Length: 102
Image (tube, rainbow, N blue to C red):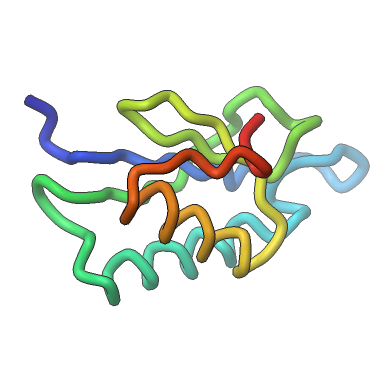
C-alpha cells in the first residue's frame, strides 16, 4: 500500500530567460495555491494527498504540467480555476479532468 492515496508532482523548473519552461507560466505560485487548497480541504497527510514541487518533467511544450500518481494522469493548467477543478474532480471525486489532460 502506498503511503499517500495520491501523489502530485508539479513542475516548477526554471530555465534560462530565452527558454520556455513551466515556471515562466506561474507554476510555483500555483503549486503553493494547490498545496494550500488541499490542506484547507483536509485532504493532505498520510494516506491522503501529497503535493510536491518537481524539477523538469520533460514536457515543456505542454507546460505548465503536473502528474498525479498512482493514476499516472498528466495535466496542464493555466490558473487557479484549473487547479480548483483538478482538486475537486480528480482529488475529491476521483474523475479525470479530460479537458486538462495531456
